[in-house]
Length: 323
Image (tube, rainbow, N blue to C red; front, side, top):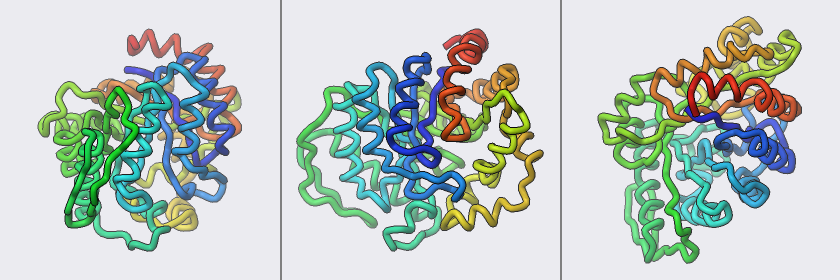
């Protein structure tokens, strides 16, 4: 299982994010992913720069580390034809290191364009149409599409990369696993549930990569690391079926008001215990994940986290997971 770094756009500015991923590449991380939000989940997080602009800068500032959106919603803020153009351009800038991670979105980010927030079934229908449009544009030539949710009129990508952009799809249940298995090159998930991979396999995903994500709060003072995790990530335990529906940071603050520091410490590795991180990551490996991106909580804690990873975590990771 490969070790990834997360460019968490909700907790750092664009220049800092690029600096962090440069450090992650130098430290030996195997890949990097980036969130793509318009809002942070909580006001305390304090940031939300444009992910695609930042990824373009990261592509130029790095030379080895693969990059990935984790994840982009191609159905509300962005039209899928525009997402295809962005992805193709980023693949060129990165010399073939980019994977396009897609999902059905969160109300938090997508409500801003005033299109309402339909039910999950409709959002999945929109995602399927978007994937077909993006995939068609990656084929080259002119694309026309008439769907229930999207139309495309004589669109063509004039700058296509030599290496086709792989498409990943975020999964959380049977319907999304079916979509990913049929249409995606990569499965994306945030929970170490083996049944997700099994449903992905049954729908056609057998043998394809599975990318997970796991938050940690590194720090030599465990109490301070727990407090930081509670301040910035107490929303995490609400689950994505809840998170996808909440409309803004005040709603996340309200929904997580009864989450205690002990609750966070029980679900997120906090401190500098390498064995605790390996044990938590093993749940993903046991569930069949081939890649796991860590989220270091705290925008101002990235440099010490990267240094600790290079010095202490990576050797243990290689021993445990053989990547």
